[in-house]
Length: 193
Ligand SMILES: Cc1cc2nc3c(=O)[nH]c(=O)nc-3n(C[C@H](O)[C@H](O)[C@H](O)COP(=O)(O)O)c2cc1C
Image: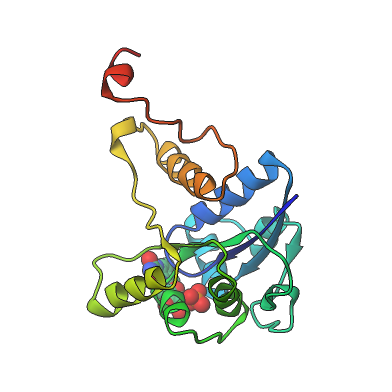
């Protein structure tokens, strides 16, 4: 049984967090611990017309962002990694500077100090120098910066297909079997399909 920490923050792209949770539940064998920031809850409603509690129902355990004493705040609580989907520039900055100012950034700090997988699905455009420096800092500490950029070589026809492909690649990084983003078999093979 794997154990993953999932956090949603207030960047655009709430759908990535929701889809990731749906896929983890479908995959089975993964215990999910979820945190949703207040700004993420706003975006969930604005972008998807979904209530916080409906997303929370997709997780095995839910923690308040303010509950700094929760299990995921400690490195002794064994986990296989964490994904922040989507990740705002504010949360990125906190992680990059080791702020630990709420349970999300503390849990991310734990991932880095314990050398566990940390994936930040950062979303902003364009980037300013602070954003770029913060992404570099997280990369230097071992985190994975994973902006949810659609891959067009798969010729997606719908937004859902674009989202699924991106979520599939995140699952790959977590070593969780997935069928959303099939392996690239080479141009020749792809053309003959
Ligand atoms: C509709 C909406 C869209 C937003 N989109 C982004 C975004 O794409 N990237 C970003 O960094 N912040 C975005 N923000 C701003 C963040 O939500 C804001 O900085 C917030 O303080 C982040 O807090 P959190 O990281 O604790 O969730 C958006 C806010 C709103 C209301």
